[in-house]
Image 1: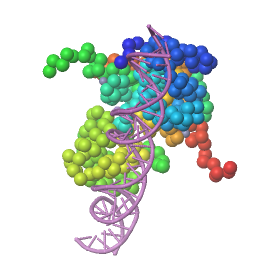
Image 2 (image 1 turned 45 degrees about the vertical axis):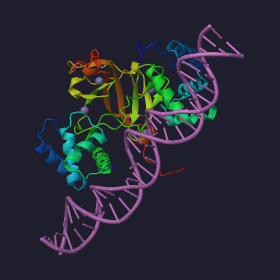
Image 3 (image 1 turned 180 degrees about the vertical axis):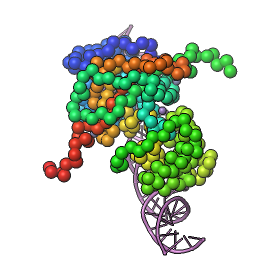
Image 4 (image 1 turned 30 degrees about the vertical axis):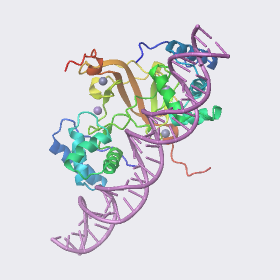
Length: 161
Length: 161
DNA sequence: GACAAGATAGTAATTATTCTCATCTAATAA
DNA sequence: TTATTAGATGAGAATAATTACTATCTTGTC
Ligand SMILES: [Mn+2]
Ligand SMILES: [Mn+2]
Ligand SMILES: [Zn+2]
Ligand SMILES: [Zn+2]
């Protein structure tokens, strides 16, 4: 829906700089920079906990009590579509299951969300460059290769069938 | 809720072997091996597309028209809890967002589902041991370290506060 | 300030998942 | 076998997550 990813922002920038960047991005994308969008973006910048839409709604409501949950969802999707924010993992909409309970990895199409197996043996062991933060106890590394599946990558056929 | 993961099953086993394994696992876990459970497990073994609960429901209904969606969900959860099947990725229940749109990785607690950052610089580049299957075009590798966060790993306090 | 494109709030509608409970069944022992 | 019973099932209600609809309001531009 949008060509190439634009400039990335550095996590250590101050909010003023990020807001300026955000406004530029909106302008470049032809998106009106509404009060709601700025406050929502600020809530995201200030968050350190990878919040859900509902959590963001609660936080933004403190600044704009009349904001609606729909506006939060609508703008989250727009921000994601334009690469202005990130999401923890590709959203499948629902659980995706398999009989195979052996640890292995996956290829996930970002377009159609199809999932393909990537055997654990096909990937070299994950190696950390330094110790992990906090007292987090890692049990297992899971790799997801994101991209486009053969069908979605193919040039759109002029519905020849 | 359950001690250690038990035996794993090999993806190349025939269905008879897997069903036997499944029955043993149910017995070991004290789970009645109902007709519904066997048919659901078989549908998972025969699936190659990482189906959703709804998709499984559709397939299982062909064998047991009276089965209910609730039974499918209930047993999926039980199977997962006992490590009998796998899921594509830890289910967060909803989207999880962040302002940081730079590619980076995450630590995810399998218990409380909290998410922590793992900077891309902290992980060595993913290296494949061989070519990818199909014509999948990988754009990016995402790593999730699954485990227990500090709080969830800590011995359960006898509510001293 | 006037205009037009697009955004917002409020609400209804969908989709995804969990819960409740009366009834039924698998597993065990007589 | 049959009796027993813990636990499973089906049906439907309830809740959570997300999207859609639409009359009204804002932003960006002239
Ligand atoms: Mn898989
Ligand atoms: Mn992050
Ligand atoms: Zn695809
Ligand atoms: Zn935790």
